[in-house]
Image (cartoon, rainbow, N blue to C red; front, side, top):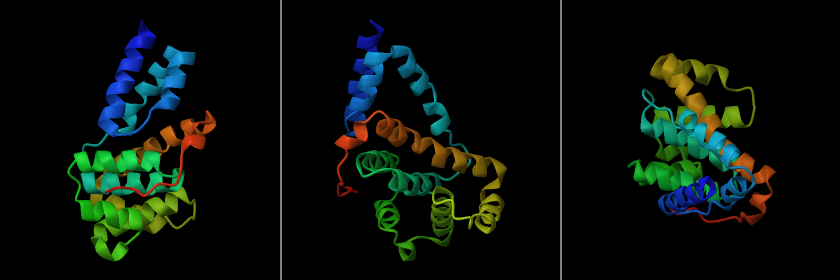
Length: 171
């Protein structure tokens, strides 16, 4: 009964996100309880109250681009579009076109790159972002970056990243 319910929810999510959830179907088939635990982290991954949606999605898209070959990134783009983030900002983020971004979004982009690449170049940007968005905004930025990295990692660990292919992301 629980498996059938969870498969139904995955059908809804696939339609909403425009992408396959085969790796999560596998989790449901093996352990519905494990799927419920996975689903319980999504509120953490989507916790945004202070951070502007543009900053949130720039951070997520940069992190997803670092983690994923395309399908999870496309999901991120789809969600950003449904959240009414400007298509030009989405495209600039995917293309790394910093000249097409506001200085505020460039700071978020560069900070996120420094974090996902562990470059050690994040200290000055962290202070800039802390001043701009406050402690709560910085926490939300951390959640945006960390949370969006979970699905591609789970997918890769379970062997479902093999189904990934390099795709042209549709904005």
